Picture 1: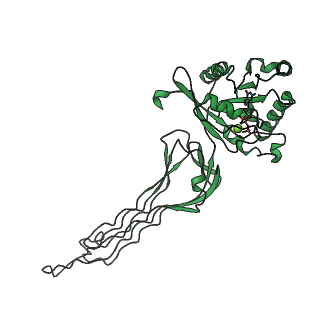
Picture 2 (picture 1 turned 45 degrees about the vertical axis):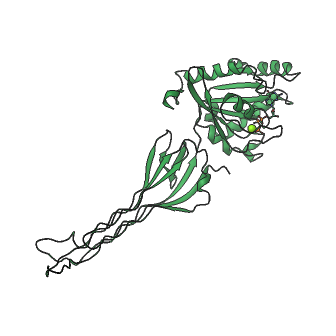
Picture 3 (picture 1 turned 30 degrees about the vertical axis):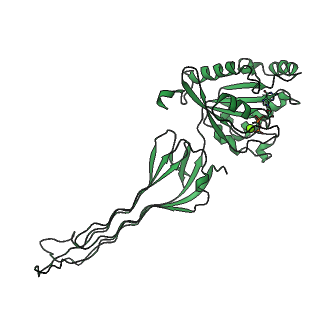
Length: 340
Ligand SMILES: Nc1nc2c(ncn2[C@@H]2O[C@H](COP(=O)(O)OP(=O)(O)OP(=O)(O)O)[C@@H](O)[C@H]2O)c(=O)[nH]1
Ligand SMILES: [Mg+2]
């Protein structure tokens, strides 16, 4: 089950209470204060796990709580600290409280202290002084921070695949990346986003995101709707896949552009590559010609390919590589695999 949004309560552990205790030793008749302080409550820390691409592990949870600390002990013993709780979240998770962004996980190895554990209470040993040698007071440990948090996942990838159902997006994904996703001849085979890694010849790499197909009126919730488009909002390149054997590829492309535009017009400002797919099938030459004629401005962005038969995929990879390396991109560049 893929989940990319949820609201959850998080609570750090309570600090341990301080206690009142007295020194009572056989040959020490006067005794004295001897109550220890409590420990620190466990904090909640969020941390990126690059291998996660969904928030589903939180689905059955309502509240996540870190451990409380132990109270102080007699003999001025400090209570044990509550254990910090480290929770792994997918790269691309946005942490919001009351609609405000607290943190965004955009890089691997990032950590965020979400809820701080409660401070300890003090035992009566702490309060001893020259003027008060037998303090009869102690304080309680503080509650840990508690927050209601919205987790919103927007996958971070370099290239986003868009197209109608059955256009061949997943076929292309499985040819270009290490992710062998499900492919089938019926629409809506892909029901949630997938990510794969493209390895370029110079050992650099980029992440490709495959999202479910989009159809006409997806903005009115037809098909699987448009919610998955948020997962390509942060990509550097849009890779359209158009099925040349469809009845009207030109209309298909226009529909895709309109649907994306109604979701977020900013997405369409990204560099695009339009892969006209399935050229291995007969009678596709005419569609190629009319498509190119209909979109002269995209002349240099159109490539004819066969994902299934691996035709022109090297050209496609070259185009992706050169766009990713172009200095005009303010987004993350292709990183060297040595750093991966
Ligand atoms: N002839 C031919 N068939 C292809 C080509 N690429 C994909 N197909 C076929 O088209 C069908 C759909 O392919 P998928 O890769 O599952 O398409 P998709 O765009 O991921 O579809 P959804 O997940 O439903 O959105 C499958 O039967 C593929 O084998 C191609 O280049 N040539
Ligand atoms: Mg698919």
